[in-house]
Amino acid sequence: MVDLFIDRVLLKNNKDQDELDTEREVVMRLQNRILMLFFASAECESCQQFAPTLKDFFKRLTDEFHVDRSAQLVLLYISLDQSEEQQESFLKELPKKCLFLAYEDPYRRELEAMFDVEELPTVVVLRPDCSILNPNAVEEILRLGPDCYRNWQEAAELIDRNFMISEDFQDKSMRSFSDPVRRLKYKVEDEKKKKAKKRGRGWGGGGGGEDAEVDGGAHGKEEGGGSPW
Image 1: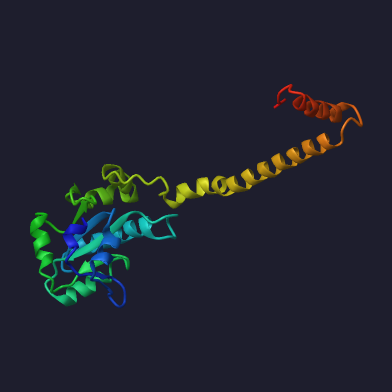
Image 2: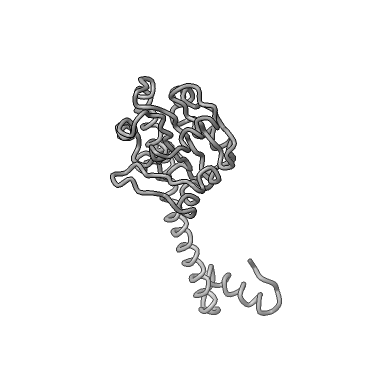
């Protein structure tokens, strides 16, 4: 996937429209991620209707409010608008974390031809190796919502067991948060038992019962009787 954009300037959909214009920046942003190429136009009514759904879909998979860990997912808007003003208008309907190509970049039209885009909106889903996972995922996104990302993960062999939607995370969070405390509790108890045994060995033959058993075990070890443990 990185090869598709290694010599291109990608823009962030933020206030300053920051550029990813170095090979290192592009690689860091795209490597080992599933890429969604969103072909659309502001004058397309279907694109306008689909944009809120796509925005919610992407936010639910990448926003920390919804997930414990952001999905390995990149959204790139490929504008087929007739003017730069139309493109700027439509970008306001898209997530702030998405990327886009500048209006004057002819590569927009090259990508349209490369992926044989015949209808709008189109969402081409690519594996990290640039092979196509879905030539148009619009219907899948409308039907399954964020759940379709799990299918893409498996198909792209990007199995990340740490990824989970917030509902799943809430079910497991109490158990995962308590695990370190429980392990520490058991460690402290084990240390107390070891100290008690050491004290028992130090008291010698002063009494019977448990002290005698501990002492006897210690002498047995000294006389070659083997470890009682």
